[in-house]
Structures are given as structure tokens and as C-alpha cells.
Image (cartoon, rainbow, N blue to C red; front, side):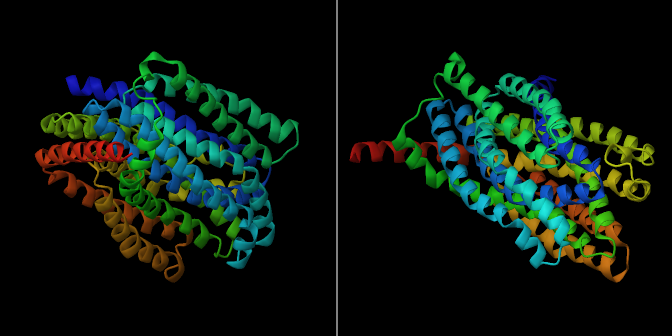
Length: 458
């Protein structure tokens, strides 16, 4: 019960934070969808493309902070938290330059792989208008990891809620009243991200609780680069392999006989399951934070108890949501579109979505445990095998050879997700928690010794 209380104090705010940030994009998709099927398809494709190149890369790279900042906070090495955070910000902003170039030429890329030119051009306009949001998102993800690793969830909760409330009327006004069309959604998302960054930056700068951790030391930032990328690269690969699977499904759907219908329905499925995933991701953050804190503090038994607590909480919630979604399968499509054909198709694929809710819950929580232990490399290999050696081939066979269309694509992804959750469960079951605590201690001492030696040399 002690651990339930600790986990809940982190998980409950982070669930709201994760969902509210994800809803920034989802709300823009929903509002653009009511402009017509062309706009829904184009924004769906643009959202898939930009999410595939933004979310998994930046979100994955910043996942290294869950290991590094969480463990040094548990070991009470507070100054290193700021060094790791500034290292992450500088690294992620550099990556954003490369990603933005790719976004500018999105239409040419989509047309070259056979996408409808009209959909491609509208999608390109949406992505170019989203470039300012890209840089804001990079800084925001680093700041969120900075606060969550210390258990400071209240400032993240408040700023995320404020920015979401800011986004709702602004997005509606830009799309419908100012006649910006789908581009209004991109502009609103960018302004919301930068508002969130500004508010968190103010709190970090002036709050007494951040006094020991916000210090900037250029030497420490440079010395942290190697250690950051040691965890950041496999963390990004782990997220990218999973996320890109679903983006490839969207591209495959664009090759079917009715691309507007297939991409729209598959995008609705992704939006729905992703929304629930971010609910569970909030609980996974609590697992990652508590596990890394306890390992850094040298408490392996406490770290192990966290796993059982978060699994109990998450599976209970997933069972309720999965059942509710199945019961409402004939009506929930109206949230995205008024097209009767789209709504009927969505109701047919809803039973598969209910199963996806369960599998996504397992892997979201166990991935959080993996990040807390610093086992991102293992997670990357699991995702590679589950999705690209098993799930993707099954999707292709069911969709194109057995003619199940979008339903076949989703069935293959579901099998990959179930396999991923099963392997992550096995890895978690066989973790040697004493060894993990020792490795965390050695890692912290090694970095401390390295910084001392570099200081003497200077």
C-alpha cells in the first residue's frame, strides 16, 4: 500500500499530462476531419508522417533521461540532473534541424512512393506549418523528464492543462473562424508547445525546489554527451521500431483500392489506441521513475515491488476500457467523422482495438520498467523481432493476399504487440534486481570520477 500511494502520486498527474499533450494532435485531426474526407485523409497522412519522424525520435532520445536523471536523483547527485537535461536539449534541437528539412519536402516524397498528389500537397502544407512545434516539442520533452525524474509532477500537470485549454479554442478559431483550414491546427499545436516550454522554464528558473538541479556547467554538459547517447540511441531505436510499424500500415493502406477510406479508418484506429496508450504511458512513467530512483538509492527490493503495483493498476484499467470500447463499437466513430461508410468500417474493426488495448497496456508498463533499469538495448531487439520479423509479414499476407484490407493490417500489428508484451514480461521476470542496483551505483561513480579527472586536467 505504501508503494501504491507513491506510484499513484506520480501516475495520476502524468496520465493527465500524457493524454493532454497527445490530444493536441488528436483535436486538430478531429476538427480537420469535419472539413471533409480529403482534409481528414491529408491530415491523417501528415500526422502519421510527422509523428513517425518527430515523436519516436525525440520522445525516444529523451527517454535516456528516465534512466540517468532518475538514478542520479535516487543517489542524491542533484547537480547531474541539470547537466543531463541540458545535454538532452542541445542534442534534440540539433536533430530537429534534420527532421524539419524532411518535412519541407514531404509532398515530393509521398508522391514518389505512389500517394495521391492532392492528398500529398495538403499534407505537406500541414507539416510545414508544424515545424515551429517540432523545436518546442524537443525542449518540452527534456523538461518533462527533468521534472518527472524528481517526482515534481504538479508543475507539469498545471502547465499541460493550461496549454490544452489554450489549444482547444485557438484551434477551433484558426480552422473555422479565421479560415486557415487544416493549417490552423498546426499553428495552434506549435503555440501550445511553446507556451508549455515557457511556463516550465519559468518554474525551473525561479522555483526553490529546482535550485540544486538547474545549475548549468558547460564542462559537465560536454562530459555527459557520451553517457547520454549511450542510452538515448537504443531508447530511440526501441520507440521508433514500434511506432514506425503503425506508420508503415498507414502507407500500406494508401496503396489499397479506396485509399481515402482505408487511411481514414486506420488513422482513427491508431488515434484511439494511441490515446489509451498515453494513459498507460503515464503509469509507465511512474514505474520508470520509481524503479530508477530506487535502483539509484540502492534499494532493489523496493524497485521490484513497483513492477507488481503498476501492473495491477494498469491491467484493471485496461479491462474496463477494453470492454467499454467493445460495447460502444457502433457509435464511437462519430467522434472522428460523419461519413457513414467510415463509421461502419470502424465498428467492424473495433473488436481488434479492444484486444490492442490489453496488449498496449502490458508493453507500455513493461517498457517503463525497462527504461528505469537502463535496458533499452534489450527492448530494441525485442521490438525488432516482434514487429518486423513477425507482425509486419503477417499484416502484408492478411491485407494483400487474403484481402482483409485495413483489418488485416491491424491484425498483424496486434500479433506483433502481443509478442512484444510477452517477451518484455519474460525479461522483467528474470531481472536480477541486486545486479541492476550495483550497475546503477557503478555508473554514477564512473561518471563522477570522469568529471573529476577532466576538472583536474583543465
